[in-house]
Length: 148
Image (cartoon, rainbow, N blue to C red; front, side):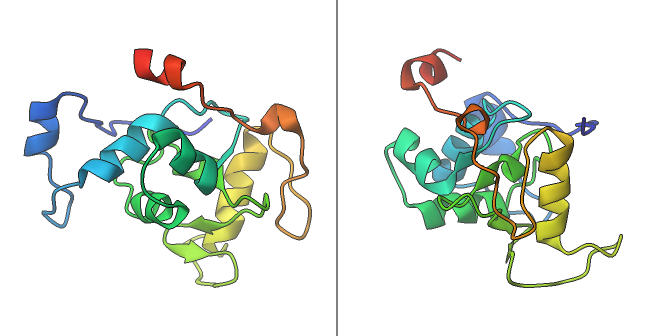
């Protein structure tokens, strides 16, 4: 649905040690752990900041949001598939849905996130909340994630 293009995602420790963001910064270990985990969320599914944190066994929902806000690997690392525990769309590109900043195509960041998820088959109401369907909520299986 979304072209991952040539988005490179380092997998080995040596690649990660050498990797720098466009701003020349290293990625903290917690951010790598978040990115590795959410890679498993398939199109048409979402998880929550809280569930990502619980599956990791470290950090907080805010630290997960911080990692996703700074995700240099989108859309290969699908940060748009993580929403608030209330099933509200939550943040995207560093903005919470209540903040409106116009992006290039006239949509604010939260509207873009909703559009991306709707294109993948996740339904939202006009209030920005996912129309709750347990089929759309991704449950992390720690054993399965550890094997990948």
